[in-house]
Length: 633
Ligand code: IRN
Ligand code: FE2
Image (tube, rainbow, N blue to C red; front, side, top):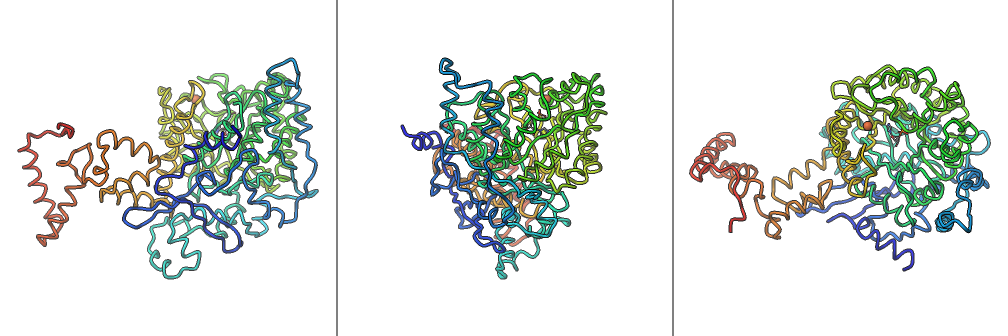
């Protein structure tokens, strides 16, 4: 079977368009040629809903995708027009030879080496010549924003955040449609609709970041900041390398299908570099990594052998490939490590523990801290954003909000100032395990010490006793902290603490986090967020079952659950479901109440009384059974 066929087969499920949905593209105004993708769901009553869409061209049946070639590089003309970059030979290949490849040299006797050589050959069509800022230049979105420039990325984002068509109409100058939405319920501090100027201003202040490496031109720009939709991140790639590009890309496509706004490639082990080529070239969402993981591979897993030089080369190697943000645990300072000694669960961050080990064994300050300005120089040459790591996050409720955690957080605030001096975009990573009553303090401290740089938290898990269900224990904390102002939520899957997530675990984690993020958006009063809830509730009340499924976060499961008891097509228009049965459907009753009121010409409340009394009599007469088995026949 040739490659595209294999991919098509593997992706038949992940590439299927969502039911009743089509991809639409909204044109730019400031920048001609922008095409901002959204998902439009057609409803059976003739209306439609427009949804934020993270799935990229994969859910577009018209898109011609070849994973061995990579996605279309839509940002290349934007980057070239800016005229501030140069294409150069790059050092990625050399870095791989120096490091990763040293351990898995292509030894003809070694089947593993042969396998890896074959994998590398598959990636040949995906290697790109890198680009960097002209000497002494700075190509970060923050740098442009601070000079008052509205980039195509910024306008793209402004349009993308406006999923409510009417607001978009106003932006697009459709006065008639705009007039209908004057009385919208947006929150006081939020704009009526997101303008490109608002995006620019938020990025200039450091209150939002646009992770978009100039070497990742395939990315569909998105924004992370508390005055925008709350975003979620899914981690992939921490398992052993699969045998083909197709399988690796499939994991990514699966994650973005369900709504991952960002994906982090946390691969360890062999062939990290090649796997990353596969992922980035085929990813429409920003990709983050934790470069210390690869640096550790390069020194054979011995933390003490790490050095600034090896780390620096790894940063450049990954920046040339197009990684959009790096988790950098520069706040794990030597004096903070003893503060973890009496913790219940010590240091639980992978990166944090690697650096703590290096600091302790050399009795030296963390080299990421001492070389921070040099790291900024690298970041600004490619526009890689910082995700300042929380290496000392609590790993149990007992350790939440302790001295070590907050000492690190304050350091991340200091480092943010340094990054901003270089116009490098920065977000701050946060916990971890935090009981509900201690969550708000995390947001307060972050706002106080990190100068409003976006917060990006892992959950937090609100309790410690739910292995197997930690997507739930953490989504509760994530919803809360999102509401308080966290800009991005790092998902947790049901396999957390237990093993590697499989396909279904990834989906469960993402859906749990979409719920948390959306709950936060609704509570914050994001202008566009409620539209989908409104459309779905209306469909629910009017018994438009297909519309209810199609508007839901997971239409497949919604439909399957309904099918379990009422599989027939006629039930998809029935004015009841199997939960309460035909007689006790509260929605049906309230509709009857409305009709009754209209007929009788009396006020709805009075009718409600009468209607309820009638229903109450009916209920008693029928034997006062709450659950009516509907499949008796
Ligand atoms: C997010 C917030 N705090 C931690 N994270 C994520 O945890 C981080 O972005 C990365 O994806 C993952 C693993 O980080 P550690 O364990 O190396 O700190
Ligand atoms: Fe944990």
